[in-house]
Amino acid sequence: MVTYELPPCDSPNLALLHPTQEEKVKIWKLNGASWSGTMSLPVYIRREITLENQAFTKDGGITFWVLVDSSLPPNERPILGSCESLRKRALVARTGKLEDAVSHGIGSVFCNPDYRGRGYAQRMMDELGKKLNTWNQHNGKRTDFTVLYSDIGKRFYSRSGWEAFPSSHIALPPVSSEKETALSGARILRADDLDDLCSMDEKLLRADIVRDVPSNKVRVALIPDLETMQWHHAREEFAGKEMLGRMPDIKGAHADCEDGSQAWCIWTRTFGSTEAGNTLNILRFFIEGGNVRDESETKDDFTESSSIDQAKLHGIAAVLHAAQVEAASWDMKDVQIWNPSRLIVLAARQIEPSTELIHRADESIASLRWHGDPEDRAKVEWVGNEKYAWC
Image 1: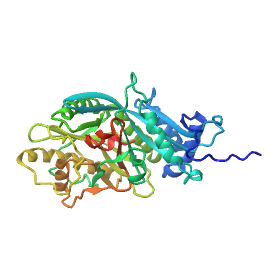
Image 2 (image 1 turned 120 degrees about the vertical axis):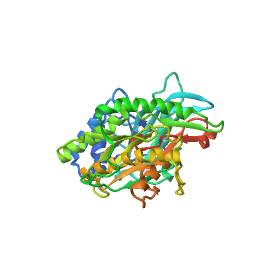
Image 3 (image 1 turned 30 degrees about the vertical axis):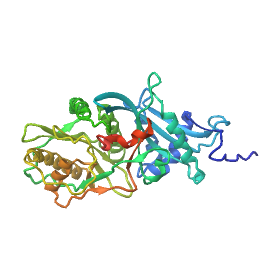
Image 4 (image 1 turned 180 degrees about the vertical axis):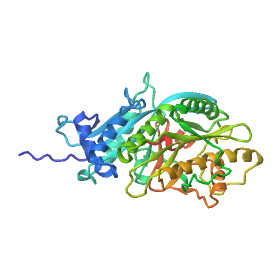
C-alpha cells in the first residue's frame, strides 16, 4: 500500500485546475458538512446543481477551481482547496470615461479540515489572483477588479490582494400587516416586474457613476442586472420549496416619493441557518435622484435631512415597511440592508428611532482586489456595494 505524502504549500507541483464532475460532488459533500445548515446533504447538493444552471451561471458564468498536486491523475488526487468564481458584468469610471468590464466574484472558498494549517488556502488564493488577472477577458484585456466576502475577518484575504471595504448594515424588526399605518402605501414587486426596473437601474447607474469623477479616483460597480437577481431568487426559491413546501413570490417593493421620483428595493430570503435565524436581505435599494455615488457610508453621525430629502423619505420608509411586513409573513428574524446610504438610514430611523449602523468585523466583509496598477488601489470607490454583489 502506497501512502501519499502531502506536498508543502510552496511545491511547484501544486496547481489551480478545474475539477471533474466527480470531484465537484466530492467538494459539495465536504463543504456541505459546514454550510448545509438545516438542509440534508442530498438537498444541499441538489441546490448547488440548481445554482450552477441559472442564466447567470450557465455558459461559463461560473468556474470551479481546485488546488491539487498536478502530478496525480484526476479523481485520484487529494483536493487540497476549492473555490468558485462567478463572472459579473461591471462598470469602471475614470477621468470622465465609462468602460464596460468583466469582473468576478469569488465564493465557496473551502479547505478540507484534514488539510488545514498547511498553507494550502493561502496558496490557492494567490494562484486564483493570478488566474483571474485575465480570466474570461477579451483580446488579452486585464481584469480591473474582483470581489469576495470574507467570513474569517479582514486579514487572510488581504494577504492575497483582496482588501476590506466598508461592510456595514442596519437591521429592522419584522412587523405585522394587521394594522394599517401611514407607511402602507408601497406596492409589492413580483418576478415579472423586475426586468424593467433592473434596466432602469442600470441606465441611471451608468450616468451616475461617471458624473464628476475626480481625477484621483476610479469608481467601480457591479451591475445589478436581472440575471444577478434571478440567481439570488433561485437560491431562496429552492430552499423555500424544499424546506417549507412553498416558494416565495414577492420579490420587493416600490413606492412613489412626494417629489415624483421612485424608490424601490429587491430582496431575498435566507433560509436554513441553524444559529442566527432567517433574514430578509435587501439585495438592491434604488432611490431615483437620491442614490449616493459612494453608498458605503461609514460614519454614524448622519446629519438631519433637508427639505429635498424629506420629499423622498416617506417613500423610502414605505418600502422599508413593506420589507418588514414580508419578513414577518415568513417568520424572519429581521430585515438587513447592507451599506445603506444616508437617506435609507434616516428613513429607517423614522420607523425605528433606535436603528444603529452596525460595522461588521468578522463576517461578510466586502473585499476587493484591484488587478491593475497597485498605485491605483487607493483611488478605488466601490459604488453599489450591496447584497446583490455577494456570492
